[in-house]
Amino acid sequence: MAILVGGLVLVPIARSIVTSSTERHGQDTVFVGLDNYLHLVGDDQFHTGVVNSFVFTAYAEIFKVVLGLAAALLLHHRRRGRAVLAGLLLVPWVVPTVVTAFSWRALLDPIFGSVNTLLTATGIGPLLASAHLVDSWPAGWLSDPSLAMPSVILVNVWKGVPFFTVCFLAGLKAIPADLYEAATIDGASSLQRFVNVTLPGLRHVITVTVTLSSIWTFNNFDLVWLLTQGGPGDVTAPYVLVAYSKAILQLQYGAGAAVTLVMLPVIGGLVFVLVRLLRQDSGAKLPRPRRAARWVGTRWTATARRALPWVVAAVVTGLLAWASPQIFWKAAVVLGVILLIAAAVGRVVSTLQSRGGRRASSVVSGLGSGVALAGLLFFVLGPLYWIAVTAFKSEGQVVMRTDDLWPTPWTTEQFSGLFANQPFGRWYLNTLLVSAASTAVALVCAALAGYALARLRFRGAQGFTVTVLLTYVMPGALLFIPLYQMLIGARLTDSLWSLVVTYPTFTLPFATWLLVGYFSSIPVELEEAALVDGCSRVQAFGRVVLPLAKPGLLAVALFTLTNAWNEFLFAFVFITKDEYKTLPVGMQSMIAGDVVPQGQLAAASLLVSIPVVIMYALGQRFLTEGLTAGAVKG
Image 1 (tube, rainbow, N blue to C red):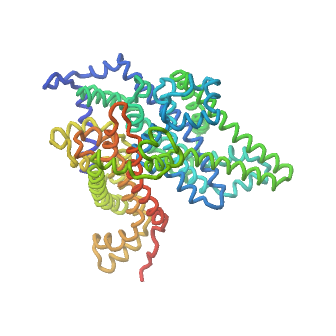
Image 2 (cartoon, rainbow, N blue to C red):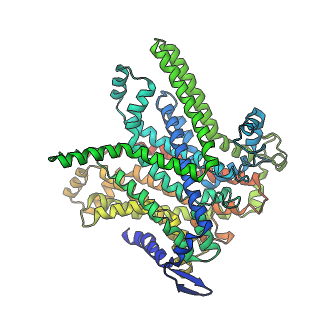
Image 3 (tube, rainbow, N blue to C red):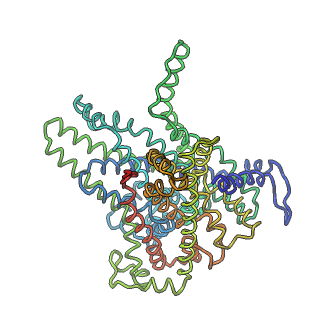
């Protein structure tokens, strides 16, 4: 594991640092020192990419927190159907990014898209135009420079809300019910209970979730590329796309590496915060101060910690207002409407409760939560429903926009055309092979490494555990340039081996990190009993530990298989020949200029999504099993 992590992550980063100090002149590579970094000072494309990454991340995280928390609260207070609703809300996070991009790209099409049609029919579209939230109607969501970034943010929020919902729901379950009962007895309203009990109880979960999601969002490439390719102009191009353009399209590896490494301090700061939060001991006691200076320092530290979130919020708000004034006020209006609706419903319920109308308050609360859940499910499942029905339309129905919500008649024309006109079967087989190989490597190596870190005591174990976590959150944006150079040197580009070799960069660290926790949860007494009975360490591992770790191994297999199945950046950079492409890259290549085969893309999206959804549906039952079920020595 150490060799793989060092060779696939640490060495490429070191090589990227060396590459950033060189420049390519024809066939020769010349050392230029810090010139590539100095050129970025006056590079307008780089400046635009950095601002776009910041704007994209900040707005997306704000709305994911608000909507994810609202969804978690709605589900937390439901007694019936909570598991089913949570499973439905998780679907956008499960489906591949390429499916997300193509479904929303078709829905937001100004001519053939259903979003403009629906908003026009309901009268909301002209209202948005009169309120100057859009410049004209019908709106060109992905082609209008003023709407392209908000549209990309919307799609990212749609895909990311389920992750926040699941994390916040787990955090809500961990808050003791006694705190809410005590607050109710003291006369606290629902808003006061939310502010003084819920938010403090979720503070740690919110911070960890936002930090981890910010790392992913800040380094996002595939969603932006598949939706807009950074356009129109460069209004949606993040810094990762700038690095890709310089390194891969212009073959200036040094300039591209400099772009990614300049952002390393930002990523490193987020990773540092995440590691500190994950290693934080919630049960640790504060040291007892013995001197006045130490007491003052402790009080100042406590005050600073309380004020830090407000300072960060004020700084981020000011930067957003400066960097994106057009988006800022539109986002403020939308966010304000959401918060006002939530506050109004809570106020009505609290008023009814205070007047003794428990039944009326229950009716209002149930009605409000039902309407909110219906709207949330419509937002979450609408694009997926559109994919399903479009896949079974004829080409005439797709082009003429007839029977938009229900195919008449149902036909498999798009599926037959997909296999006849595209090497879709080959792409499917390639994806299966790469995903299976990556999963096998991750299971074998992570099981051994996870057990060693959980059970064995050796020098450097704690540091290596932190290194595994760091490599897990290390974005592919920092690795694809040096890995691409290494693959060229090994002549492994345009082959499935290039993906099998590089996918462990993001599968192994996560798998090891997860299994360390699983192995640590298994009682060590079971292994000691096996050792006393004459088993060797390897036999105890195989006969006692692995059977008990089946839920953890299944979780690793599930997440590894899903990540390999959905991966886009490495496959897009390393593979150019059709016969070696995987499904995400192959589907992207089906678009030729402005010609978008919506029906065939919908059919392909359905075929790509079904295996992932089935895997999660079947694996969910095993993931909830107890880790030590049946662990009784008889």
